[in-house]
Length: 510
Image (tube, rainbow, N blue to C red; front, side, top):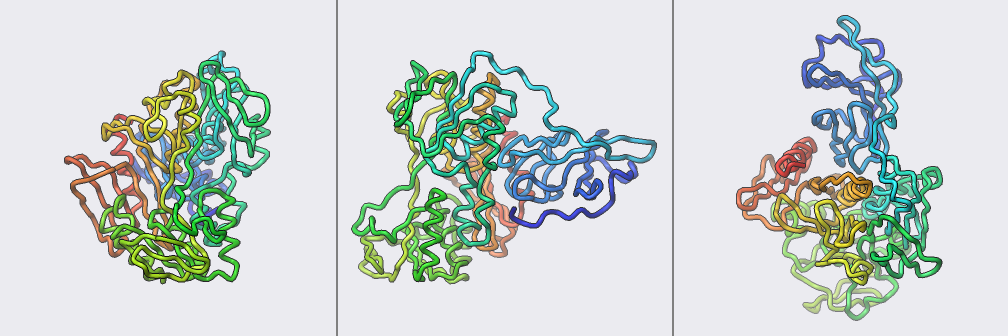
């Protein structure tokens, strides 16, 4: 999936490598037989591990070794050097790992290590059934982690979506652009759920939850009793409330069904599209539709795209990148009405458009939690362990507002990787781990051939420091608040983004 896999080139570690050629901290690219591999030295220990990330085949040789782990430069997946296990999302599958053996002056990669052979604490016997409400990133990651951690009880995942969990970020990127086939989208193959004994209930809606009785009431069917519950209901797009907003050529992009409908509309005679909103989803959609050859106009109230998240410098670069590809911006503007073949701006100007895409933000789906009496404030409030105000009920993903030790604030993040990592942490805590969620939020945004990586969280900042050149798409941009570095955005410097992730997490004890 994604880019071509790393070729199996270089020395064959199974035939031996001179120990003297491996300095402390060295990473050597090679292979074990026909499989691409890395040989890594950490002090007196040597590790042989696959060179290709299990998530979209990123080149681990360009990643970062942290203690006895390695992190992927593309999307920050993390693997154990000791057994290849996927330790942190977005990767869920392990990478190959081989035992190393020193014979005199040579080091050899020998038999493969089974990543499932590791000690796990026995799960609490009281957990007879765990229910996950939500079929997105957080829900799937939680269900997967529960089985990885040895939980063998009943596990039910309830999703209102018609499709099994899929790669949501791709809906506005390569899939929408037509450069990624739909086979890439499922996060797990269909037989995975049966093999892992995960009861996946699709197109199923929950009517209510009762934390006191530990019951989940479905709109149709018998209620489900649970011993632990994860709320991962996600978010829904904000809707326009203007004349013409309900016309059939007005689209929103959140689900796989939405993306399919937009692709079908883009393949029709529609050649002129208006994107309302210069958010990440709006501009990624604009880029994807330009790659399909449509004429694209973007309307947004901001003076600079993405300014609130990335600041003026990167915002101007993003605008220039889109304009270089033919996108026309109408900034400091809003849409007053939508017609059948045009939109009307608040200024009175008309823009021809036979296809309209709205990307003005999302709202967390918190009704179930609020109706059940759970503490909420612009999201479902959770503690550092992601547990809600009701014992045994956890929340993760777009709905969860958790205490961020770095900023001292309660924050809610709408990032895919953060949702997955919260799902993993919540799963372990359901099994008694008492593990604080302290992963630095991370996301990436792609615009044509330019990818922006962002780690941390800066709701506001009073200083920006730039290393390198934003204009040349080779930079590190750090956002400070009261002399604390809160977040880092990079373009063309993936390794620096990984280093920033480690530094941010170490500064909070994560």
